[in-house]
Image (cartoon, rainbow, N blue to C red; front, side, top):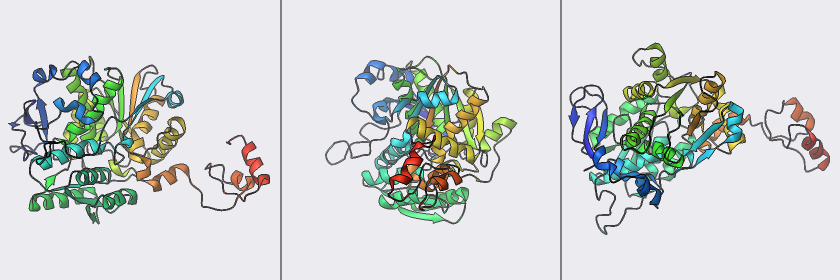
Length: 439
């Protein structure tokens, strides 16, 4: 790869060739980071080139991705392989949501509109291409759900088999996606850490391509494309703050790497501050920052399954991203996450799953605490769609049990939901519509 210099260990600094079997540091076991030849890339990736590009996917940024020339081509016909269109999700300026928070320049990046409805599609696209180019016919990973479904979808589109390990608490919507994409699904009676260890052992034994983002350094390279898009969609400007949820640390590391890449090639002239948001019931990364201590295991006690990672495998990169960006840490309760899901929906029309809304929940809390200037340019990154976890959405809306009801029953329920079941009678409907909360 002409654009890639090496894979460098973030712990000991050892350098390795960025080959297909290079995952972790052979000297100390640390995670690796892909280093690019920015001087070479500068002449091949400019604002003019990007502005004229008709490829509205992550591949518009091919010069800043670890993909070898010809890796995406079919060996039979020399044509581009069939693949899902990952990336180029919308960036909305959400005035009503901003007003609710007291922020004048707030944008929401809705990555729940990727092919399998999460940001993880960006990483899985890289995994599928690299797996094919490495001659693998099977890809595998452990996941709480989103990485799994994104990998299964990407694999199905490109003719690969997939084996997915999920903890038994994975939402049924995500497991259903896996089965629909033809994946072999291993549901593990244990937590995410136990699931990860089992997948690692199986991957090593059977020689599958390893899509585990906490091990494979190329996957955060796919995730960083969300930062490229944010900057480009803002007219090649960097926001002042980016709020996002944090689990194993790979996404926040990728987001930070993306902005640093753009800065290094001269496409933006400043870097944002990151707002690292974790659930109060599982916040090992934020706790380490707040206590100035190493990351230690925590229980996975949150309904936000996609960020319920008690032992973050990419913790070193996450800590570095927060530290280097002069970042902010915010921990939110499950109740605050559910409230953010409701607020996102009714002010911006964005339907987020719990982990997808956690970044917004943290931003709400930080803004209320006056930690964010009201005139700052802020982006809240929504990482997953609410349809992937309908059970949590029902909790967020406090969906009542179906029953015939009139205005009396609605008042008795305290208007906990806007869903009211009535008989087909205008005499029952009229008082409902005249009530101050409706329509």
